[in-house]
Amino acid sequence: MSSTRNKNNRGNFELELNDNKAYFHKTVDESRIYQTNYLPGEGLLGGAYPLNIMATNQVDIETAILGIGSTNLIDPKENTVNLSDFKMLKSLNVSNKQHLVMPRPFISEDKYKY
Image 1 (tube, rainbow, N blue to C red):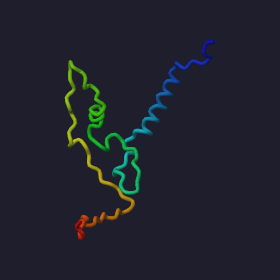
Image 2 (image 1 turned 90 degrees about the vertical axis):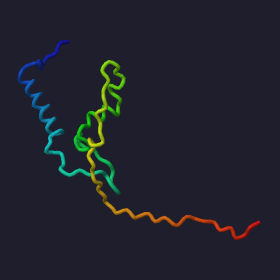
Image 3 (image 1 turned 180 degrees about the vertical axis):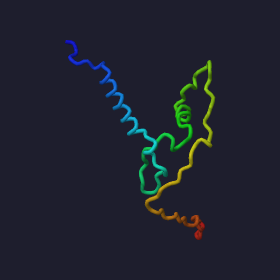
Image 4 (image 1 turned 60 degrees about the vertical axis):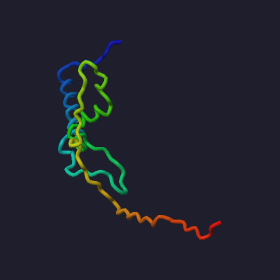
């Protein structure tokens, strides 16, 4: 049975295009990215971070981790990941952690010699 509705007209295309643009701006809009980002500290669980928060070239880092292009023998991919590419974030703690107090090492004094 053939379709009873024609979806290939200009109005439907523009409607779907506007829906896609609205979804993109709702999920990827730069104004929604928080100005201050922290790593989870004491008492917090890790959350989702936008791509540009942890590093400056996140695509190259993920490509290197997954090994994409590592077996290309014709045009080998060079390593483009440096330590300076990573951003250092501070931790956000909800509670203060007690400092660990270690006792002096145990030394057994052998008073009774057999």
